[in-house]
Length: 454
Image (cartoon, rainbow, N blue to C red; front, top):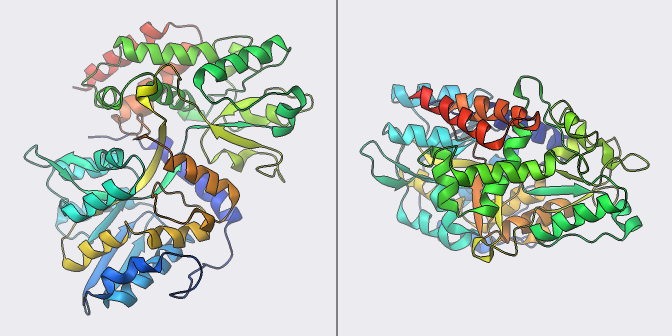
């Protein structure tokens, strides 16, 4: 299986740069018993004697993230006597496949996205995780079943097994806006998709342009539109429809998928809605597209993009003052779908079983493990047992609350599709769509491209 990694790699690189710019110079690692952390998380592990057991961990985190992870596991080591040895690599995804196939993997492998983990599980190269860890995720993560589903894959015999713990999450279902601009015109934050559409119409009636949208990204042009479609799929249809679309058991040209593409078109192909008109959508670089939020007078009033986009805001922009965000709302008319959230995240899996490795995975489901990284910044979690006041800043705290209030979480769909689709036909199809092709024609073309892979 070839997984679409380009968009994910791009976003992670940008998010990492943004985090590094604002991260503390020194890793925060509180002494046991200090602060408002959940130190009771260690109680279970202090009854374990894992002295002399080494747990090797491999993942994508480099400085400063590797030091933060080492700080987190230091409390596990002190409680159990285990020795955790983390190794980070910017070529992790290539190296882990080599190590797994050679039979010399680390105990714990931390994948940047679940597609490659699922592929390795299907080859019998990962170990299923025990029931206690699965239950901890189900009980303690908001939308717990979603996180279990995202970690459950067919093994070599086609039997579904639970394989890992999501640890560190990225949030995509956000709309950015200028509070001053909203205040100047008396606009309120929409609480539903119906209100968001009505607000957009009101802005047009007031002589304003609601949205700034740009799909440009060099060779990856088109990917921002895939995020719109993915978010709309979750707001129009049940999670099983989303999952079927992602694995193509529901064809790309299914009417339900076409409906989501057309809803994106209601925004991106409406000349009154988009700064620069429809012709600018496919050509404006996504990094430049939010600039209209900051111009005087405003070139646009809203921009839908993931949590990394502040990396491209003007220097000195203060989140919460110059710009702010709200959750991309769900439809009031579809209460059965709840409040879905789309994003990404890293998943810790077991590549080589040991008692200490199993214990470390269980430790990563505790509030304490999450809270230490929360204090250091650059970390979001769906764990409902954490102390949200420990987030490094108000922006992260509010984004964390969006994750905690989610009723469904799904991973970025295009990153889970085969590379020729998720990083190919889907991208180019969205450019064709905003350039004038119909949603049905685009969906037909993408499905033909998928069929050609088989």
